[in-house]
Amino acid sequence: EELTKVTSSMEGSRMKNMGAADEEGVYTFWLSATADGAQVKQLRQQTEKEASKKANFPGFRKGQVPPYAQPQITMFAVQEAIIK
Image 1 (cartoon, rainbow, N blue to C red):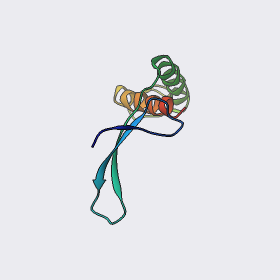
Image 2 (image 1 turned 45 degrees about the horizontal axis):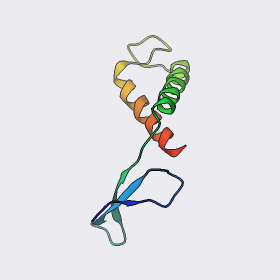
Image 3 (image 1 turned 90 degrees about the horizontal axis):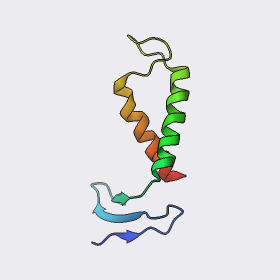
Image 4 (image 1 turned 180 degrees about the vertical axis):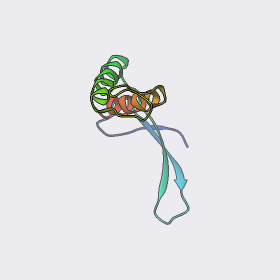
């Protein structure tokens, strides 16, 4: 099935119905969206700054965000950029 444009507030997004899942009435969708790189960068910096204020990871100084948390911060910023 071809991807079709989603009629929602998410500009440039496309969705494909992947068919019914195991449970009755539950469907799986594949979603493609475009996010502005500058907005992602700004949101990532903002999120990292807020996270460093509250960060308290074992083995790291207070306020230090460990490298293994960086991809999670980036994915959060991408999701936020798509939503906004």
